[in-house]
Image 1 (cartoon, rainbow, N blue to C red):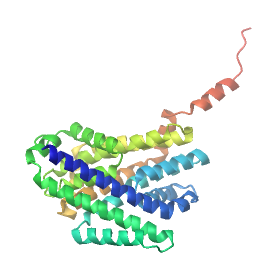
Image 2: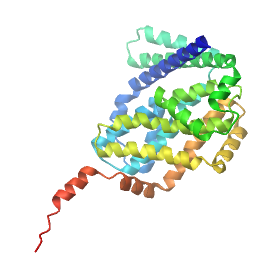
Image 3: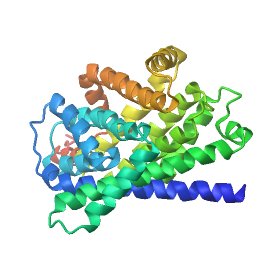
Image 4: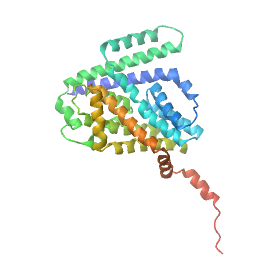
Length: 325
C-alpha cells in the first residue's frame, strides 16, 4: 500500500507539472495582451472577460488575481468584478473538458509535437509557446492515464472509506473537496484527479456533486491570499468571490437542487468523466444566473458587510466635535 500511495503522489506531481507548463504556454501567448485589455466596464463585458481570460490562462486563480490587480489600479465597478467572477467560475470548466478527450494516441501526439516545437529553433515565441502547451497537455494525459490504471488497483474498500460511499456524508465530502483544493492550490487538478478515480462509476454522482461544491469553495483561499496586501477595492473582489462560492454551495445543498442537476447530467451522457464536467458546468451556470438576477441587491449586500474602514476613519475626522453649551 505504501508504494501505491507513493505512485499516486508521483502522478499527481506529474499532473501539476503539466498544468503549470500549459499555463506558462498560454500566458506567454496572451498575458501581455491581456494586461493591456481595458474593456468597457459593463456587467456583460465582465462576464465575457472572466469567461475568456480564464479559458486562455487555464486557471481561475490566475484570472481572478489579474482582476484583483486591475481593480486595485482602476477602482471601478463592483458589478463588473462580480460578473467577471461568475464568468471565471464557468471558464475554468473548459480546462477540465480537455481531460475527457484523453486517450493514448492523443497523448503521444501531444508529447511528440510538443518536443519538436520546443527544441526545433523556429525563431518565434509562438512556436515555442505552442510546443509548451502541447507538451504540457501530453504530460497531463500521461498522469491521468497513470491515475486511471492505479484506480483499478486500489482496493474498493479504501476508496469507499475515504469518500464515504455507504453513507450520505454531505459535510464530510464538501470538507474533503475543500481541503484537497486548499492543499494542492488548484481546483482543476483536484477535479482531474476525481475524474481519474471515477472512470468505473465507483463514486456515486451525488457524492461527486458535494465534492465539487467543496472544491469550488477551496479556490477562494488562493484568491484571499493574493488580496492581502491590496487596497480595499481589490480586497472586496476577493470577499465577493468567497460569498459567491459559499452562498452558491448553500443554495445548491438541498436535494431539490441536486437531484434535477444529476438527472439532467445522466440524461446528457453515460460517460462518468463527462458527467463530472457537466455537473460542474451546470452548477456554475445555474448559480451564476441566480447571482446575475440578484446583481444589484448582492452588490449592496457586499458593500454593506465589507465597508471601507479607511473611508470611515476619514469621515470621522471630518466631523467637527460638538460643543457643550
